[in-house]
Image (cartoon, rainbow, N blue to C red; front, side, top):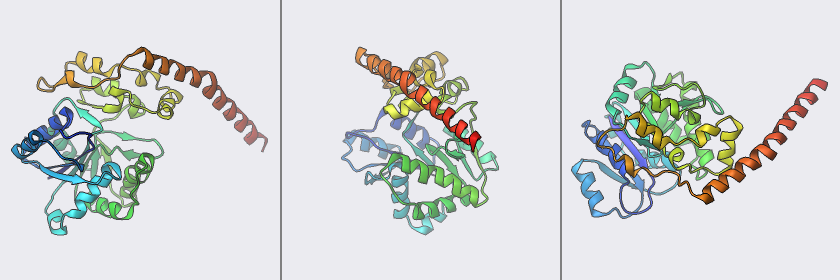
Length: 294
């Protein structure tokens, strides 16, 4: 099996959460590649990769994770790609605080699905979330075609729509079966409290850091995700006792609860609930009335 771990990082080191995942993967005696943006890695990071026998691939910072995966795959000969029996694509948008990679791979292999993810989403259309994709040969073939034909973009939302959602759509059109290891009762982005309770062992970094644009925060509020947006996931993980003892949990970067941040969130919520939400409700009522009359 080949694992391609894509990671964009500022600076010359490997972040603790990336290092933890890479070390866990390399311990499984599988071929692991660390794909990262072009930068001068420090000597300690190079020594770590060499000691763990992890291949380093420096990539142009374009197209997000799919761009890195695509450039690496294009650098590999067809004969070498044919020698891979399985391919796993991973990115660094998720922190794995519990090493369950062996279990994830075993469960994915036991499924009849051609491509398996950890979570799936129904937003826009059904798709597997691309921070972890386990592909069997039939799915690998479709992936290579998709990366060749889909246009590369530096727009995050275009990449999500065309590359992530587009890949699942293409797989389904080809008659392939898709499945996720974890199911949630709500939109998965609003359900990490469920996943923590289920001992899934991973969390979106953006949730921990609350690193969302106002537009993205409005998305949470618009769909009843207030508690998901403002939850203290760090405390949830600590209380669960599920993090590996070797995982540096105190290194997790969390949203800083400063007066300035609290004021920003207060006025953002006030703006949404006092103006945006009522306006959107009125528009929906007017649209319904117009449809009834027609």
